[in-house]
Amino acid sequence: MTGFFNVYKEAGYTSHDVVAIIRRLTRGKVGHTGTLDPQAEGVLPICLGRATKLSDMVMGQDKSYVAEVVLGVTTDTGDMTGQILCQARVNQTEDVILDTVEKFRGLQSQVPPMYSAIKIGGKRLYELARSGETVERKSRDVRIESIKIVDFRLMENKFTIDVVCSKGTYIRSFCMDIGEALGCGAAMGSLVRTRSGGFSLDRAYKIGEIKDAAVAGNLSDMLLLVEKVLPFPQAFVKPEGLAMAKNGNLLPFDLVDMPTHIDDKIWLYGPGGLIGLYSIHGSKLRLEVMM
Image (cartoon, rainbow, N blue to C red; front, side, top):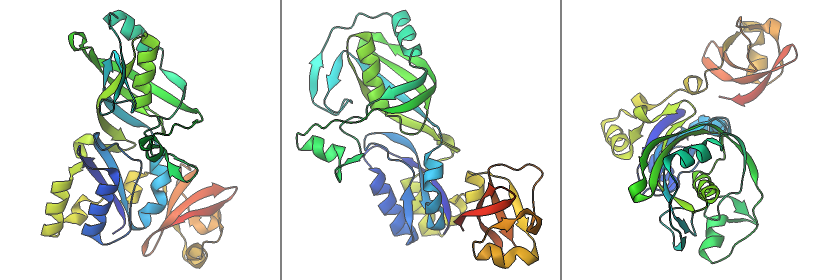
């Protein structure tokens, strides 16, 4: 099987748990396109077979989250599963919170949390954190495309945000930064990823549904084709260019029936179906991923 599953990861599963389950069901090569914390829920695109070669491309797309911000508390993990380090009184008004949150729109410099899957010196940060170590982390540029507050519960010192952001944004760090800007500290409560690129929550399948489909022999009905997930323009190789295409050679435009609109990448097809993903290289096509 080659393609993608749009998985709804439920709380309690790690991203690697999901990969392992799908691997057992499909008995093929499986990967994910960006981790979700065990307590988090939502969209986790899973790639199968030759689609694993496209994981970085899918992972690089914008993502959307709905997250609960808990004011007046800081923890060692940045979320409410960790040990409380400090508590403070919360007296900020809705208007102050709205103004503060709005200032985070746009390009931001963010330091990844210690409890994250980034590797430093061959070890993941969360492994170092669990052993009591804290290491210096380089800040990275991320972009908050949009942010809005969808729910205030200030009697509980909580509010909920809906965020659209770039690859690599840590929502826990974002919640902590909001708390620091407000002067009372904050940690992340619940987290749901509602979208990852073209994968949306309303079209995601839970693990139980995928297992049922496997038993019924209907897994292929859930599979999303690579060209649907990455909808680049399509081109068709002419018979005289087929051998060059299958060998991964540069293809002159005159050996291809090119689309009217040329993007930076195109899907190239032959008589037997999809050959691969190509990029524009001057007046030729260059193979990026053979399918």
